[in-house]
Length: 500
Image (cartoon, rainbow, N blue to C red; front, side):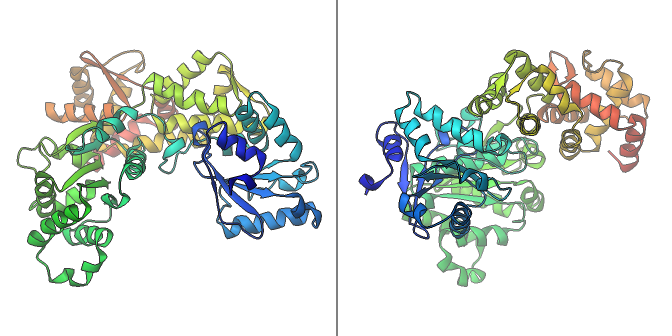
């Protein structure tokens, strides 16, 4: 019953509109889940809160209390989350025991609770307490290795609204690795499942579903596993379209398939296209909507007339963030972490220019800055703070790995040829004729459409940008790091030997 809740939670829920849900008690403690996702930090829509009442404190010591709280966190699998402890007593004796590399705990004692209740900025005071106790690099929403959704999802609102607002259209999300395709699909999945029966929305990671049998089996397993035992007796060309129509009728609406990493599936299906022809037929009959994400192979098939991809889906290209999206990603979390930015326009502008607006690199950049602040105890950054990023080996490695993974030998050769032929690659643009001449000088002759295609991939990858008839390197940091780390002549010889 809500009347039994702590006064602070009642105020957050009743007066300030925060969503609060009571959970099942654990080891005698009342457990709640608080929606703090609006703060755009590493706090979710179900941030766990453990209520430690006076009766809990009477018969224990601070070390034993923290051991007990640790057992609650292990039992409920909360060890990797930021957990708020609402303590109906003095937080002073408990705080020294709460600091642990294993947990991220926020202790809010009785005095702090009263201060928040009396405050004219209760949300701000609660956030101040959290940011003072959790290392800001842990509290920040930045993620460079895994997809994100909800409060940690930034940008791409236009792409989300375009897909959600066009339920009768299939979509092909195209972009390089680490540009945010999976995060976009996962956020789309979350939004779609909130708006309708979750069973209507099916997310599939397709990198290991290389054959028609693999794909069909996985879809049947997700939609109606009772049909799996007899699946090996079916002829897929007849069974699968009928199966999808039956599932759509049973659901009373279209099935929405979110297909991630389709490039390998495209490669393995190229030729007879049996699976993709079935998918196209199910979409044409109105049983299914498809939102696919891929890079090279998916992009290539969009323009081949006899491919089942041709005119199958509306193309959505994910490129670098706009300046406004980048500013939101940089500034909003910093402000909520109580980090002041001196000369904000210059700081944002330099981070944007030096990362070429690539969201993954922006997050890596900001993560390094926050780790430095945790080390020094400072809570401000300035243009001078950005110098530390250039010396970070992890950032340089991340930058170069992103380039190497997103380009093939032909695109690499083009980049190396331009750098070898240009004294000032950042400030001077190069034409296609310049690129052709730079390649020919080193013994490589490519058809015009091959050069065009390589330049298009490099634009999509955020390495180059096009202005009129000329191409420019987008990031001065990228060219500087590449030239300082490698011998360009050597790299060019190696890609030439390996074949273009």
